[in-house]
Image (cartoon, rainbow, N blue to C red; front, side, top):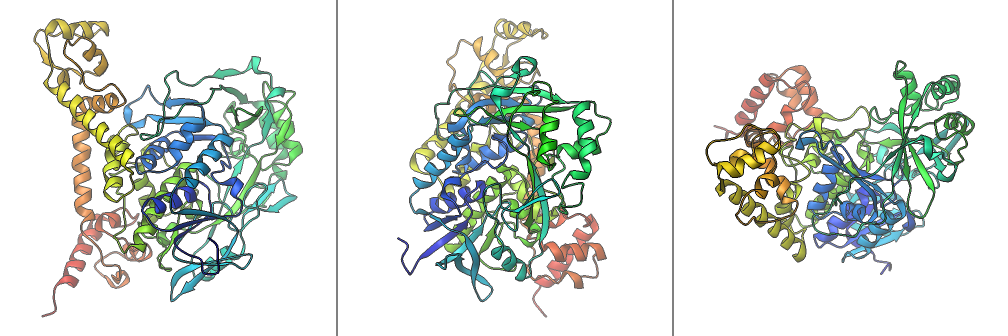
Length: 626
């Protein structure tokens, strides 16, 4: 298989969450794909916390699954606790989250990759790209092997010139603990004229659960109702495990303040900026001095180990200080630390250098996905990886790229934010980043993106059948709710059970459901007519009926955005010469070089009058010369 003349249509570098999705997506589209990783044993490795999903992130996992991705299926195989966050709030912010067994997750990802026809895996470190005439033409491995390829997707995570810091005096060149950094390729990318920056992230210490006093901790169990991320593959859940909650109080804060001068972050060893929304314990103590205490979650690493992940105590302090502050946390007085926490600093490439389909603008047929684009989080990496893999494969086939709009899903919001607005800190998704969050919920991801996945060839026959059946069930249930009229007696049985005002005339279920506290199942239970469907489609249909007015307003806004997206901007438009635009707008438009008018409108500093003048400039240039 690996002879002298190796050639692949798509070569994916890195087998983390972005790389796994990119390689699988490309292979699903029928192109010959190679996944290169420095260590086959770490395919799908969860380098930080052992969890998938959460606020906005859970929606991304379901979107990736709807498109045929691996993350949701692997998570379902490894879930040892599942919870639906924000269930007490509106459905736009419901967020599935799964605590996972690290080993089971990693093995599930590798199994899904190795089962995929047309996808080969190879252990090796890529030292450089092969280039021909400003376009990528393959890769060179550190052992001298050369592999030709039509397209290349780089998903290097924190490996590009990665450096681990523990205190002021422990600095290790590494992509993560135990894995070497990638230097040569990072230097080559910079030599190509790409702008490069440095970010940092961190991880907390791990501890031996047998040394924890659980009697003083708050136990947190998962939801009773089993939840799965995947629409297509239903898997048996492993045994379930609780998490535990404790606190870092004044004693911890005092130790941190005393030890700050030894922190790699505050001692001046780290120049890269870290994630605002996942701060180290040093950041928390310094930036939130009035907080009485900080919550800590003890999360199980897996079913075959007693090791616990100490979520909330990410740090770059020396090992002695880490053990010192751990032992003043309630329940951890006699704790044994199994692995110290550390900070890691790495290269990223500001994403304004990418097209909306994640191709590197200065280098044809080269794609970036994941932390190399300035993001943080498994889920953000997976969403980018899937779209990069799809578009790398479509580039091979000379097909138009797939660009997800903000109205299409959170993956669309993520990529649009990156390439349009750029990043000045590691980017993390939140529901608040989307203006269409009621349209792009976790429950309707299959309805939104399944048809697209089917149209471009991402789905297999059994998956297509799942999609068709789900759509048929939702249509039947919606028709049933709109057509079924309840008598006053039937309706009042459901209304009076929740203290709602009774009705005096019969009403259709589709109208009654708009009362805030009334559920579709409660109304169905008092109906004497047969009810179609009995699965998750109930949730989606209830939301569609209950929030019909809000949904229509968002759909109208989405239609207007789509109209603006249809107004394409020439890639060679000389923005700096368009004197009808403000100086700031000209400079920022020239940097981003937006694909459409809608993308131009989301660039900070581009005003509505700039957009109007931009339209006039484009129309003027489209007119044939007299």
